[in-house]
Each structure stands twice: as C-alpha cells, then as structure tokens.
Amino acid sequence: MQFDLIIKNAVLPDGREHMDIGCKDSLICAVERGLKAEAGTVIDAAGYLVSPPLIDPHFHMDATLSLGNPRLNQSGTLLEGINLWGELKPIQSVDDIIKRALAYCDLAVSMGIGAIRSHVDICDDSLTGVQALIEVRAQVADYLDLQLVAFPQDGVLRDPTAEVNLIRALDMGVDVVGGIPHFERTMADGATSVRRLCEIAAARGLMVDMHCDESDDPLSRHVETLAFETQRLGLQGRVTGSHLTSMHSMDNYYVSKLIPLMVEAGLHAVPNPLINIMLQGRHDTYPKRRGQTRVRELRDAGIVVGFGSDCVMDPWYSLGKADMLDVAHMGLHVGQLSSRDDMRWCFDAVTKNSARIMGLEGYGLEVGCQANMVLFQARDAIEAIRLRPTRLVTIRHGKVIARTEATISHLSLDGRADTLNPADFAPSSA
Ligand code: FE2
Image (cartoon, rainbow, N blue to C red):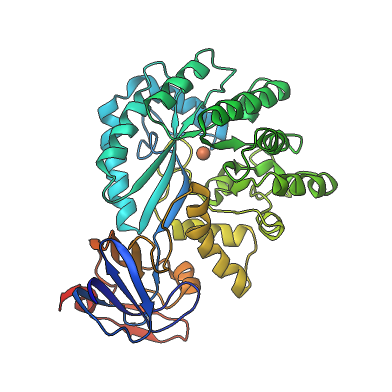
C-alpha cells in the first residue's frame, strides 16, 4: 500500500514501542511494527512519544491574552476577575477578540493542541464574543477544532437579558449550553438555572457544560441538581460539570451519596488545576485548601475526568502558555497522583478523556482514526509530563502543520543526556 505519511519507530501513550504509523487520505491506515510500505513523507520518531493531539476541554478564548486591560486583578480572586472582565467587555471590539484568539490558536497548535472547548460570554447584548469566536472557529477549522459553549457569565437569571442572549447565541451556531449556578443570587435560583439550561439543551439536542460549584463553600451543591436534571431529561453522557471545586470541602458522608448520583447520570468532570490552585482558598488562613475537586475519587468511580486550562493571561490568571502538559503537571501534583499508573492517567486526562468529553469523532491512534498526531521530545507519557518537552512535529489530517526544532539536549529518565540533531525530525521525502 502506498501511504501519504509514515511515522517510524514511535512510542505510543499506552507504552507500545517501535511502532510505525501509516496514514492515507487523512486517516490512520496502519499501526504496526516493521511496516513495509512507501510514503510521500516519512518521519523518524527515533523512539520518542507519538500521541493523538492534546485536547483542552475548558477555556475562555474571548478573554485570553487580555491581561492588564483595562487593569490587573489585585485580589487574585474569582470575583474580582469577573468584575474586571465586566469592565473590559464594553470596550473591546469583535476585531480585538478575533486578533487575540487567532494568536492564541497559533500558539495552541504549536504546543500540540488539536481541539479546544471554549466558553464564550453571552451576557452582552451585542454578543461581541460570540460574533468573534464563530468567525475564529471557521478560520482555524483546517488546523484546530474549536467548540463553543454559550456561557452566561453574569448568571442566566441574575442578568435580565442573559436567557434571550443565550438563545440568540445558540441560533447563531454556538455548540454547547453553559451555565454558572453558584453565581446566581440564591441557591434556589442556582437550581432553577440548572433546570432551565438543561431543558434548553434537551430541546435542541445539545451538550451541556456548566461552571458548577466553583466555590470554597461546601454547601454549594448544584452538581447534585445537574446530575438530577441530566437523568430526568435523558442527557446521560452529554453533560459536563466544570471546576466542581466545592467538592473538595464537602462532608465525606454527603460525597458518598453524591458521586454515585453523578455516575448514574453519566456526568463528566473537568477540573482546571492551574486556575483553581490559584483562585481557591483565598479566604483561608491555614490550613489552606487546595481548590481542586476530588479527581481520584471521581475517576475511580468511573466518571470521565479531563483537565482543562481555563485561562491564559486574562483577568483571572496572569500566566500560561497553551501547554496542556503544564495543566496535567499541576493536576498531578494537587491531586497527589504520583504512582506510575496515576501519572499515565494524567496524560489521558489531557488527551483521550477530554476528547471523549468533547464528543470528538475519530480521535485516537487506532486504524480508522483521523491522522492527527503530535511527536514529543520525550520517551513516554510520564516523561512528557515531567519535562513538558518540545513538540517536534504536529500532524493534522495527515499533513505536518507545525514543527519545532528539538532542544539540543534533555535529561531522559535514565539520566542520559541525549544530543539531538534537529534535522532528524524534519519530514523527508521518500
Ligand atoms: Fe472557566
């Protein structure tokens, strides 16, 4: 068989070594050792890790790269971030957001990200962010899957025009229904918002992804309502609870009831480790809470858990570089996920788990999957998290779309410093 592209001698995320991957017509057509075939392009992976792309299941692309505009967040809290974002919204144009978002997408692709689920604030009667990100989604489609969530940042009930604007955004083509029940005026309004938003999603056949219980208050229990409404409306497997930070402070007895309800409803969970280790616990002295939901317990119960990045250089977070391996690294530490299996799972949390949460089709390294891959300068998934290494080659639909030169040397697991020739990783014509 004549292939368009062959990657030779790769390590796969599941640990298989010396694997060759053959691609034709944008699809993976062979994954085996010693593949005997010709190809227009051959890449020697030289024993480094080849994975399907990194996936970011939770981001805010309308706010990214706006750091300092119009001012910096002094308290470092979620609530000051929301206020600051409220100051920026009326003074930014569609073009401003498009320009920042496209710059971010270029960076994301160079860092091996293949898909992003971005919330877009619809609490703005002009729907500036929605207009901008729908345009960006179309412009980047050849190299990045961008999925948009209609996000009522100021509360779908608390903001008087939010529900109307949310419907308008969905009519314009936004993909997923969002929410923020812990920001509504009362617990009762929070519960009502969850019900209403799930009903809208059910009527339209859409997925749901709510900012849910992003709070240190152990009595913030909207995830219970989210699980209930998911069951009631038959939305199992299509609903995600993002953040879920109050779960870290909840009473253990209550959680022993809650997690089985979440499993029953087929909820997915998306913690955002970089952001919540920074934002949560700001009212604590010591002991100071970590601000991450119960990742291990949710995972062990069978819930699909993916790590999201949430923010890069915006009103909530001043740092970040579109590196999902930074996100996995922080999630691993905060969750104390230090066994070999746990660390490998953290790589899954920024790849295949997040792809499943987003409902991406054809994701993976099996025959028949989309030929979307990343070659990392790392020997395996654990080393990738440890080093957060150079993404040597990014492949989309069977074509190289980004390439970064190898670093001169890096310290591998056995303490050996590898000296690399960047030319080794350039695609060669057969
Ligand atoms: Fe968020």
